[in-house]
Length: 314
Length: 278
Image (cartoon, rainbow over all chains, first blue to last red; front, side, top):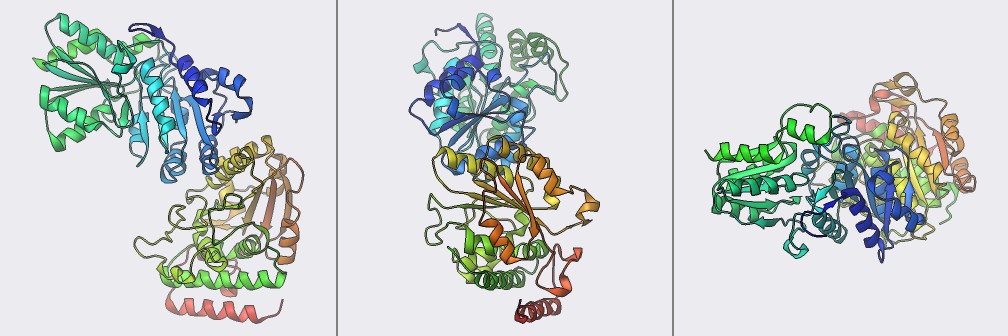
């Protein structure tokens, strides 16, 4: 994989997880009629005894995963993002969070991925919901390199982890995998800059990178930070961006009021208040339609991000 | 552990005494459902389940999951009787920061397998335990205690389907069917009867028994799994607040905040009934 290569995030997730299952006999996959759509057909074929099907049982499967974890298994539950977050929220909070169980929840086709299927299938509140749970770790990897890193970190971390991935193909953002420092509580400085800091997460990362390139051409130098782990937040990285640049833009495929931008703003309000511009989905249910059109309707295409940054700096 | 009916009866009385001790300390609690299921936990903890109170995390132990987490006093009373925790600890119930909170916390107390309280979680947790234990190659069994009001939670029926689909013969669930929930008779609030037929239709092997007949309880539990390859379900018909006649079968004792005189009467009546030979 080299920078710019387009990769199917679900397929990549499935391949990485299947590879990581080697030598981890305790790892099991729980499907809520959701494995094939989560890129896990290969896992099911390779490890049929470690693939358990539950049908469209989207509350129960989370509690069942927690019960399995008490017996030393490491369950991975992957399904369409709202159906493993908003739908079974109390199971995630009580059975994974309060009970501190070692379960990995993967919300795929997250964000606005399902632009065409509409608000019931979009997941633009999952960061907000899961961020409230003490002890929960949240990843939203922004490119294939970050997906690999997030899964490795999730399995190495003994506790509940949520990983959100999208479904439209995403480009590789990094020149080399070594450049990515994503880990639990660690983000990455993707590129240095002198005028403004842009902090992006998940599928918004490649578009933020494209916006930064456009801004550079227009004479605006952006420090691009990838916050592939939303909780625990890499506070040092955020404070350094505020200290060095004095102005912060956050970009996310999530409600702007309660996700990455809110986490950054909460930290900086306490430690180092600076002017901020929080880009994300406004307070409404987006219209449905082709993914790229829905992304445009909420102002998250690269040219719109670049324009918002220019206005912010004026 | 093979205890006689008489021994289990004695332990059930001890559990009920402990429940009143908890109420005395905490000044309030879900007493009705704790008392109705005391014969069931006495049987499980003293005659049926494989466990080591001195080694509560023994990997091959049988698991007990209190799906009806509001019967926390029953769990604490039983754990104390069985020697998992000192009975003196019961006197901290209701204190700020007590290891005996209003609903059980698995990280605070030995013998608590799950942090329940929100209804409809315990059975799916128990299903996961049974699956996980089987995958881990352990012969442990999982016993889950539900309430009859709890049967209205959809997640119970999700778990019911999963248990039979995955042929969890190492799972035994018991419904403490005391017939009353906070708003009134369960069949009037939301009717899930005939419960035994509904569970049977979900693929479980079912027995419906008198949940206070200790001999019958022990004989029934001695035959689990009731059918190879199927989860076992017991509908135990019980009486709310069983053991204290003036409180029996009355919905106002679902959650009880007793005036001192009423608590003293409860203590007297429990002892008086206990003296009557069975």
